[in-house]
Amino acid sequence: MAVSKGIEEEIRANRRVIARLKHEIFGVDKTHRSRYIREFHSEFRDFKSIARAADVIEEASRRDIVYFGDYHPLAASQDWVLRLMRDLAARGRKVVLALEMLYVHQQDSLDRWMKGTIGEAQFLDEIDYRSEWGFDWQSYRRIFELAKDPFIPIFGIDSEHRDHLKYIRRRDRLAARRIGTIRTFFPDHLILVVVGESHLASNHLPAEVRSELGGRGSEIVIVQNIDEICWRLMRRRRADAEAVRIDDDRYCVFTASPMLKYEAYREIIDVWIEGEEVDAATPFFHEAIEEIHAFLSKKGRKQLIALPNGRRETFETVLPEVQCRSTYHAFSAYMRARRMGPREITAVIENLKRDGMRYVPAINTLLIVKSDHSRIVREAARFVLHLMRGEIMERPGKRLPAEDECYGAAIAEALVCFGAGVVNPSMACVGDDSLPGSLDARGACQAPGKGTGIAGLGLKKRLLVARALGARLGEALHLSYHEGRMTREKVAELFAARLDEPGASRILYLRLAGKTRGRGTAIRNRAK
Image 1 (cartoon, rainbow, N blue to C red):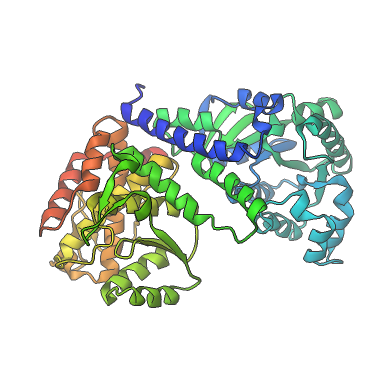
Image 2: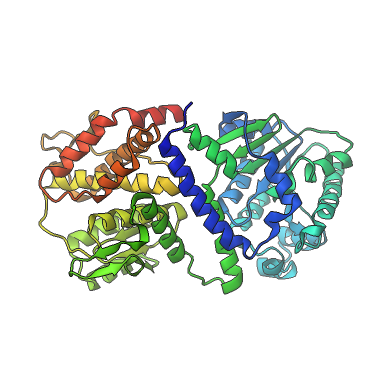
């Protein structure tokens, strides 16, 4: 399959993001240069076939030892540990956990906490969690809670010292001995070994365990989100893949894009340096904006931005502020204080309830009730859309008919979906199948039981329709771009197009839907 110019452009954009993040991370963490780390990366660069997540779990259920490569800062990584625990048990396997996050000498504290004889705070204090491990306890805590009922034995397998790679092969040997002991006491259990991914090169921990056990037993290695494999999947137009088979005994599953993976690492370093209250959302939001804007605009950051008051500002000075609140009600008051009208506020609140955040161009602010990296990338794309249209800090003008507003919002959602996908390829444009009306082949909508179409729907239902239509169009636009049927320059023109005249948004939506007809359906059918 020939690789299109569009796909290579996206890969280059992603590599730029990753290079910047790695520079920030490895300015603090130099371990990536070591032979041990390079041995891991040299083995996990390609794959034999695409697989489903369920296939990986089914294969794991047949093995005696399952090695899972935990990417410690990423909560989605621990999500997969939980999935393995549940699904392996559902397939009738008795499981015992072997965790790198705990030292062998901390076993007594773990046992007493799991039995309830000491509290959580005392357990964390006894194992010096913050200093010795330091990753998000609330994410790891879920593993221990799940292991309490039904009971799953847990053992620490690591040994000191973690602070220097010169000890890492010794740690592998000692961990293998611990796993050998676990096998002696639990001969019929599947041992789920949760360790950092770099331990899982063939001559690292798995080789030490094979030596310890005399080659007895079968094993499988599961790693996650390997950069080079992500790029290969993009070139095959399969960034939506759940997993790949590297060989008969090794798989890679996908829980986050490379950008989100490294961002999680950078944020935990910031927490270690600056404390729990560090603002992670604002720098990530601004950096996502810069990358999406650089992809679409030839002028980049040198561009002067014209504001509605006639002033011209630099790119840096118009970057949005970020506001976080714990309730939607608090944001209602905030928007009223910023002179937004009731109808504008209602629309923003509905989107906040659905997504947990929303960029609002009228006040040039990202509002967050619930933070999520993928959603932040979407809202970064939304800012870029309004920036390229010249709508930053612009107050609402003459109100358009309901149908125009709906199709205009659908086009905006499609372009937001496209822009987010540029730097976060794993982010799918997913529509809502429970629409309040019916959609024809080109996306035209009719209200149920009425002849008035979109105009017959209330505001909340129109927002749902716009979101669904936009997701379908965004999905189709992205595939058309990957196929070389739409250029980056044409997409940039769509981002910059103002749709202020009556009928303009409907005409553009139906034209685009006609050009890309069937492309979104092809994606959905392929993914099934």
